[in-house]
Length: 155
Image (cartoon, rainbow, N blue to C red):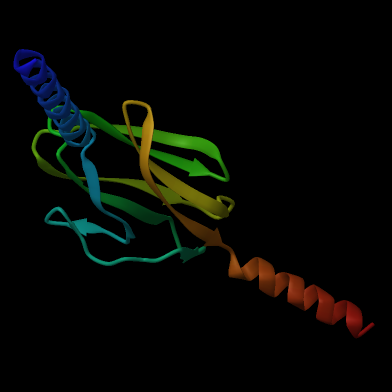
């Protein structure tokens, strides 16, 4: 009886230990996205600002928006930034991760006519780890619509 009890106890401990080990391996292999921000530039591997969730069209030239991520625990993996405009994939930029902490960034040049909701997904092994979005808006379109309403109201 004692031998059976010891066998059951050891088997239970082994199963618990394997479960804990598997959950630790799973979290380590997945890693984490410690930071993810949109910025107007990246200098010395750090974003210089956080531009938030609204970017206005600038007619004076091409705008560039950077997406910066600080990745942890993904050494040896490939991670990509998938840029989408209103749900349509516009770019997919892969990165080979070379350390336990790895900072990567990608950028997109925005032109008038690219208005809408821009989303960037951080993808590893086909799984979206996190995503961020911003609205690219054209204030001149709103002003033109207001002017058209005012002009028609005056007639």
